[in-house]
Image (cartoon, rainbow, N blue to C red; front, side, top):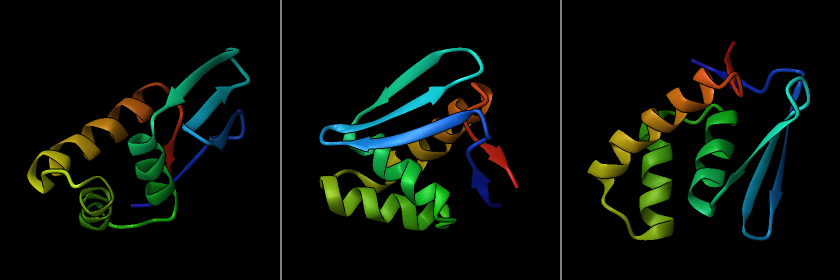
Length: 86
């Protein structure tokens, strides 16, 4: 499945992570470095296993924990209307 940002959401990577702005509601979310890499990978249509592998390599994390965390993060983004399936 592919994911994209809706037209009312903008995303800007920063030195410390990233920021998502929902211009429809005026709300914004700050993302840490891990979330920023996960979001970038998801928006690049990387398979979940590849997202998990990339995060585990970048942050020396537990691949099994990340395999659970990435889909949960994606579900939160979708629930907040920050990403949509295409």
